[in-house]
Length: 332
Length: 179
Image (cartoon, rainbow over all chains, first blue to last red; front, side, top):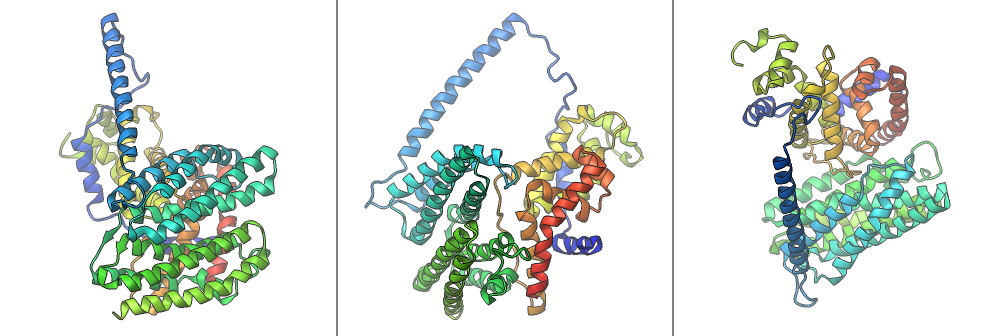
């Protein structure tokens, strides 16, 4: 690849100017929140016995307050649950998902990749209980109607993630490099999916018809113009698992992202009641596409070209349905 | 410190900033702001997050100004702090959602798709690979300056750039095949 071409393409892809007034905002902030730069050694002060005792006392008080806050937090979290059948409010569901997502994120110190197995192993070991708790919470929650479809998708991805994390730990303990890579591909996909969709769930709001249609139009266009999707759906990428020409990691990742972004968009800007039926159809079809993409990712992880190819006609068919669903919404 | 800041040398500004002068530190960062924003945007792909990251990095840099060795250049030191700030912001974002406006026309749609795909490809690189691609091909840095920023040798910088380009190569093939 020519250096010149890379310079041009990366400049074209990333070319952006700082937002208007950005430097000025920084200058104002620096003036409003003055800091005293630390000089080495960091804490040159000497402590008297009295001030040391006072500091120790304050630290104990702070520790006691932190423990009380933790007890309160655990208690208030457990109060978020509403027994199944009574339904859960949208905000309580959003909070539960946000908390579980934050706990799972905290377990992962990534980014890790296939060349840093030890970091991934540490992440996986910490991640297992967090993902398990997330699944348990979803199982016990009475999901609000708005999130029924995406909730089912989320459980699939979390279950896939949990299995992959267990596989990753087992493979790492056995020193099985190829198995580590396989588990890694599955785990990353599941994590990527939640990273893309969870912010939409937690910020989901019902919008009016015009705003919903604009969102559908925008992400439909994004799906239509996704060059990797075109390659996958046309069959041109169908030797990517085994071929060294176009690695599926990139081709598939971009294809899946285009569908997931669409899925996330209609959750973030939830349809008004007047479009609920058509929205449900679109959500169902995007969920079907998501299930096929999961199958393709499993095939990719297992280096199974035939399995990957077998899923393509299904994705083609569902993409046609998604297109019709979106057009029906846009023509309303 | 007010007024004729432009006449102050970098050393004078550093001295004033070490004494807690915010205007002096802001003035020190002025020539670096565009580069810092580009590094942050290249790593985070979001203008608002990039602006926030540069601002946070500026405060961290100010607190650590005592660590800047006399005679060393501010630019690589500050860009390294920005890059570290972005690493924290981007933690666990293996697959960041890209925000794109709908294209205006069919022809533009192809260009936008190509640009978006390259950005998506960048996001699938590891953080360190993305950083080195941004420094080299977006900030047009020579290997020596990349080396200073990352605290590695120029030879190691060249090797890392080559490895990142190797990982990025397939996506350019994908674009060529699709459009």
